[in-house]
Figure 1 (tube, rainbow, N blue to C red):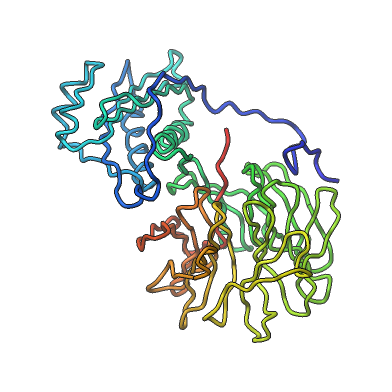
Figure 2 (tube, rainbow, N blue to C red):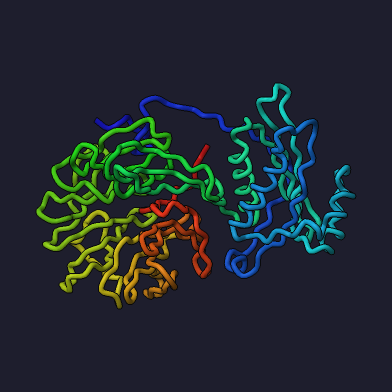
Length: 447
């Protein structure tokens, strides 16, 4: 049986677990500042991050570590350009013991925004208090204040949370510092699911199946991961929580139960079954009833939902060329209504991934002798290359803000994960084991 469900979700854990990561207290601020998101991609905000003012002892050096994490988070967001410390070192010293901000002087050293912070330890030594204040030096005003109380082991998550608040203040949308990437790592006995933070830290193993696992996919609430596992000697559909503690089989039919994709409302799962002699796309409803969406003698696979849940993009070799292409169909009527092909100019296209904003679809395309990531624009009906250069790039997955794509890059016999901003040719390597596959970027994680 399925787990009990709430009205807003597909599944709810057997035991309700509440984890208090941190307590947050907001400090009053002036109305939030917004910038035009299109203009923001052209010029970053110059940001000065002052050293933490330590109240009491800091034997572990957490204040220095906190600043390092914050600076990295805001750089990786690609909204900000941190000002180098020597430029404002003397000004920072002058204001260290004062609550006043000399906006004119900060502007003169090149800072548009300024972050001042304080760090103190809880009396029993088991926790810490971090206070942040964000200022707009150009418009001479206080923008945002936050105070967090957290245990020592949650320092990184606390900083990620504030970094996302800064991005929210600038753009009106949540940042992605708190997000994670699920992926497969090749082990001696098969492929296991791992999680890693957006900044490349906190790598941890989720499954210990000692078998081949495939296609991890997140639930929209970021609490569950569904995937295909051969643990029971058949490619079954499995659901596991992100702690790796709760696990159940969602679907088990002879043959493939593969390529799962959760609907945005968490009420349905699109998946691929081979019960019909070849691979077809089905919908698994919350009552475990199946509905067939594709009815074609060629292979149909790799479904991905549009953000509004009305459409599904998928891969099929139904074009008659014997090569896979990307198509879009209605999520209710399937291919019994209009089916639109969107990939052209290549004999192999696969792994479609619909952007969170709904305006683009990323996919793997063969270009020459290699694979590259292309992005199809639903308004212009044109595809453009995201990746170029050495190695084959495959298996794209979008960040929840729609600004970045993570993919697997294969060079010789090594497979690692890379993150690249859409519209930016530079890529950041996330994993280094040489064994990473099938990345899946989490939705925004709610604590």
